[in-house]
Length: 330
Image (cartoon, rainbow, N blue to C red; front, side, top):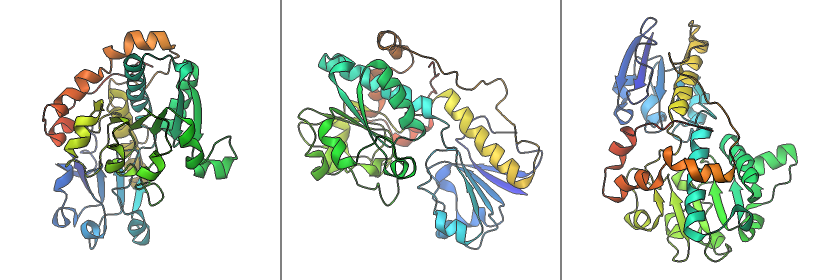
């Protein structure tokens, strides 16, 4: 058995070696020749798993240590007997805390209290649900849009067109697929209230860059169109500009690696289906009120510090791959 693993995935070295030949390589170095005789891949978003990479290979299983899977051609995989596993929900609390830091930054910048703002959440899955729970606790009026969930569960959600005119802050937490690609466009944002804010910690291609450049719009951006080749104008405009690290917490990364290892173990019947990084503990959810959030968030996610390297011309991929993981604290 042979497994190729993205070398930037933490906590995994030595785990699968007793059971397989293991090769580590950077995510953008996966090639047709490299994967030809490989049984499983453990990847991140930088590895494009499609016909070009996989055709003619022995690959039967792909585990991505990420919540998103738009870097995988799932239809091609299904048609060719390749099973795919994601790490859904692994870093939800890390993203929550990044969004919380943005909300605190906005409140200080605009001198508001949560009860004076309406927050629109687009995508109410693992991350969006947590943002909703905590934002309501902090006093924001929250309006939600999630068409798939609305159809399944008949919730008190609204359409995107209904949501946008109601909100002061729009935060995006959708996957990237054919229905969400480019959905945040200039026509949609024209309906936003004057001085509104857009927060994107989902996928860069969900929001069109040109639409985010509108003069009266405030933006906080963690994910960008065309990463790592991001738009310099948007970088300059954004009040928060981080290199796709909103979910980069110690616990989130441990969760992601564990889910990937367990998925491989289950598929290949290895004795690792309960594995978790040694010495690590998972997230410990806690209640936190708005004042305590204001008093403590900079100790864990200081957005001035987080944004400065990219603002100052740092290399996107180097900053992302070398990021010092944050601790979750609620």
